[in-house]
Length: 122
Image (cartoon, rainbow, N blue to C red):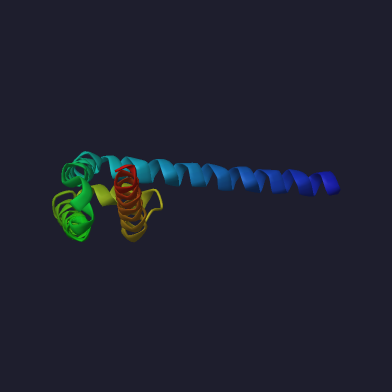
């Protein structure tokens, strides 16, 4: 009986693990659709921080709002011009909301971490 329960528990964990891997893979696939533009914007912001050196702390607020604004434009573009692609993710069990929250949060946190590391390096 104990062995039977452990086998069932192991199978349940493996199914959960497979679903989590699939979800992460789908989110990465979705992020790739706008990663180039978003990372290009992040790198240009980091370049401005390096360019302004000691005065960079004064432009950080503007760069954060710039990043938020460009993420909004990316959101608008993907929502309107690639709306048919959302059916693919929906059929695989991922809602639009989950895709957007996870990818935009990841992108913005990446931007903040890289900005802080660039500011500290100066």
